[in-house]
Length: 123
Image (cartoon, rainbow, N blue to C red; front, side, top):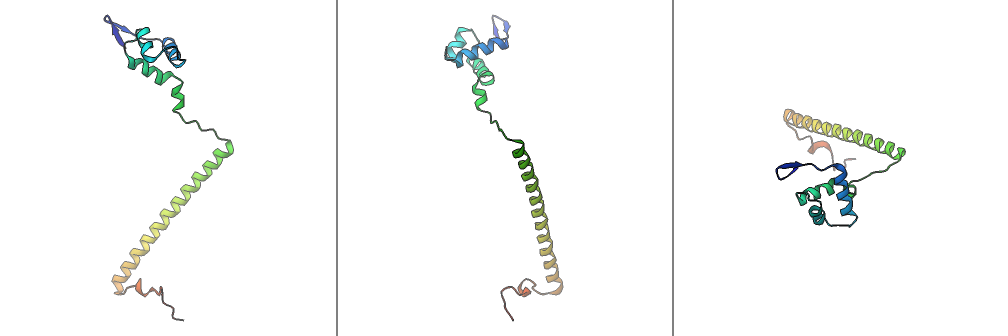
């Protein structure tokens, strides 16, 4: 809201849309519209363009998908969650088993990992 001679100025939606349309159609530049219509600030009109103009739609992503695609996406997301959960459970098991091996090595004073038979073939 700008002040002109101490009076607050409010611009109607219809007025804003008219100014935006004239700029977008090429009838006048942003600066020309600001001066011609006596809008207090270049930035005010720039904000109208950003919020009300057609270019505002260009910055948005619209995803069009069929019901089958949407269902498949839901299935894939559910599968991803199941796999992530299974991976987390596996990681917990590995950590638990490594801790168990470490405790057993300390308790029995042997190196279980070295004596596990990996790499040797005594047939």
